[in-house]
Amino acid sequence: MSRSRIGSLGRRLSYWLALQSLVGLVAVCAAVYGATHLGFEARQSEQLVQKQVQLRHLLAESMHDGDVATLKHKLDDFFIGHPDMALSLARADGSEFYVRLSPQPTADVRITRFALPAPAPEQGSLDAVLTLDIRDDAALLRRIGLTLALAALAGALLVSAGGFLLVRLGLRPLRDLVNQTRQLAADTLHRRLDGSAQPQELEPLIAQFNELLGRLELAYAQLEGFNADVAHELCTPLATLIGSTELALRKARNAEELREVMGSNLEELQRVASIVHDMLFLSQADRGASARRFPTPSLAALARQVCNYHEAALVDAGLVLEIVGDADGSFDTPLLQRALSNLIGNATRYAQRGSTVRVQIARAAGPEVLLLVVNRGNTIAPEDLLRLFDRFYRVDPSRSDADRNHGLGLSIVAAIARMHGGRPLATSSSGISSIGMSLNDAAPESGVSAVPAAPAGHEATTIGSGQ
Image 1 (cartoon, one colour):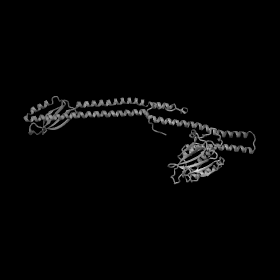
Image 2 (tube, rainbow, N blue to C red):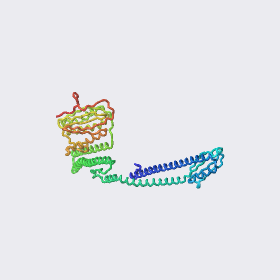
Image 3 (spheres, helix red, strand yellow):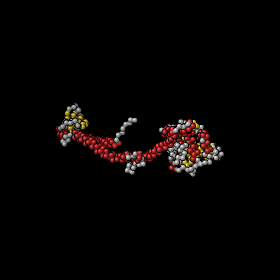
């Protein structure tokens, strides 16, 4: 599956930090340049306004004596010390009244036009054009702009270099974490990542990874035990088959003897086939197979059908079986029959003789339905309860009943519970063991409620008799 490569996190952070620094510094320098430019323009405008006021005042004084030569002389004196300014005065008819040109003409000028009163009232007004040479200001502004641009680039490079070093230092704990994970292998799953020197942001990830390592360690241990159990369970019938076949081939046998050998071999082959079929079923359940839902009007009726199949075994064990409660819903009926058969068979083997085995059906909150088989016998230890639904796990380490049961019954119950969106359940205290499962009823409730225990006056279904 193709996917786009993200690349190095350190390089990405460094690039983004460099870009952010460059943009920030450019913005600051642009603001400084803009403020300086506006300051120059304001000063130039103020200078032009002041000269305009002074010219008006000078012409107003000259209106009293009407001496044009004196006025022009005063205008020449007015521009002494101001080589950056030029003035042009023209009469109303367009004729030139006074002109003072800039000594060095340039394109960098600011021009303002206004009207001035003529020295003689009969001449009307004069059109004035006042020019200010801003060449020095423009050159200074260009130098400032160039300086700011170089400062922005140099600052961005400096910040980028520092940011690159900081990013590498900041990612050092992540590199240490990678080195720790490289040391993990199948034989070192007991190790955990050390988060003492890691930043706070990585602590949840380290905690989740350590929890995952714990589950992986447990799963790996269970897998190794599962492989050993599979080898053990298959080795016994295969050894029996090989041994009986070798004995049968050592000398001539009559038909009756061969029939006995073949019958014994058939039993062992059926046992092997049962183990293989159960393992295939568990494999399908592990791959996410879900139950096929069918309307089931009564789980109690379903339980009675299964209990009838176990009636002979219950009588031989001296047990009485009760069915308490009921519920309806949408379930996979064959799978529930198989799970109930495994639960009742398990209770029949371990229940105290003369006691009562109870199949308890109850609807919990919402769509959850509880299906439990309760029996009286030896209390199951807490450490055994945790592994009760593991494959090939037996509470009895001697495997005294290994010829009849291969230790997958409760694992199949757990798988069927998961296929119905539920979970396996097991409790044991004071000699009372309750083993079963919860089921998620996918169909809407039809009003049939379940009773968790038989109340006073309620008659529970009873199968079998104690002897």
